[in-house]
Length: 135
Ligand code: HEC
Image 1 (cartoon, rainbow, N blue to C red):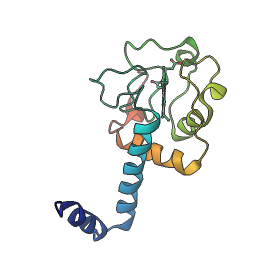
Image 2 (image 1 turned 90 degrees about the vertical axis):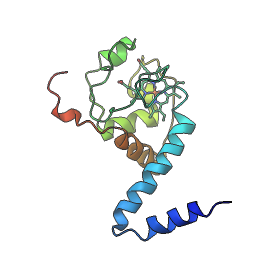
Image 3 (image 1 turned 180 degrees about the vertical axis):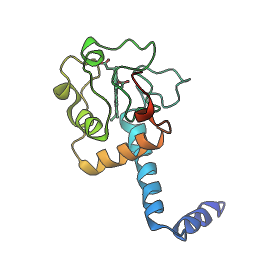
Image 4 (image 1 turned 45 degrees about the horizontal axis):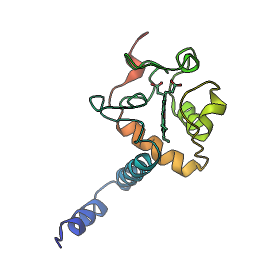
């Protein structure tokens, strides 16, 4: 077995900013959780096939705004923006938060799990949607 992973871990731990390291750990835990809970329906790369809308750049995107995706009326007409708080509420109880959505119920109530998935969703949202006016 190669020693590379150990070296990589040592390098990460020796990094200057502990907070950066913590953020990386959150993102990577979030990715694992996302792969278990969300990825079967949601591509992160917009070019990949996706049953639900792709979630690349979802942070602060207007709900129902992914081009050409066939959203439920409930979601399309909701008028909300996917802020961290809205994403938390969605993960916790999406069909309670938005009756009529066609996304099957997910019930992620653990705040830490929500934190991790949020960190990952933030990492896959390089585009600053708050700068987009009316799109
Ligand atoms: C069984 C398939 C499935 C799973 C699992 C799933 N989703 Fe969804 N998701 C959907 C569908 C379908 C929609 C579109 C809902 C609508 O139009 O009402 C959606 C919509 C969304 C939206 C709204 C996006 C937009 O463009 O407005 C977000 C955010 C979202 N899902 C996040 C998640 C997260 C985070 C997870 C994992 C915790 C997850 N979903 C798990 C199928 C799924």
